[in-house]
Length: 105
Ligand SMILES: [Zn+2]
Image (cartoon, rainbow, N blue to C red; front, top):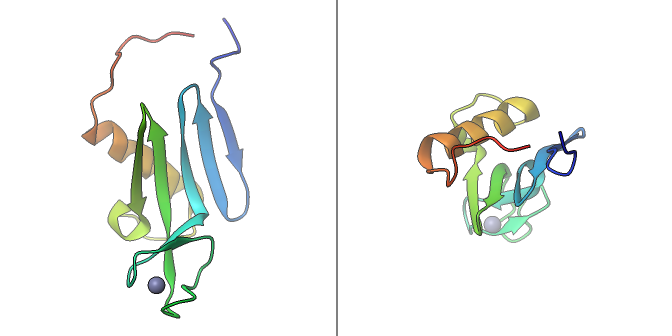
């Protein structure tokens, strides 16, 4: 049982994530997207458009970066961090083929 592959979970009041060997999942304010101009910032309001931004789920793995904004996750509350992180991971598992099906520790 090696600890080197142990995933690392972190949680704060406005972001959460799970890092693992070769990638990570993130949900929170640091990746907020304006749905008017499309710009990403770490702010709840787009400076350019002066509109609200939405927090995003971001998955990084296998050389890919996948972003799912809150409105596409299908959850009810943008501030329910654990639900949005978990549902984001669920979308990744539902939509992307994993390279290896074996479990290694
Ligand atoms: Zn904008």
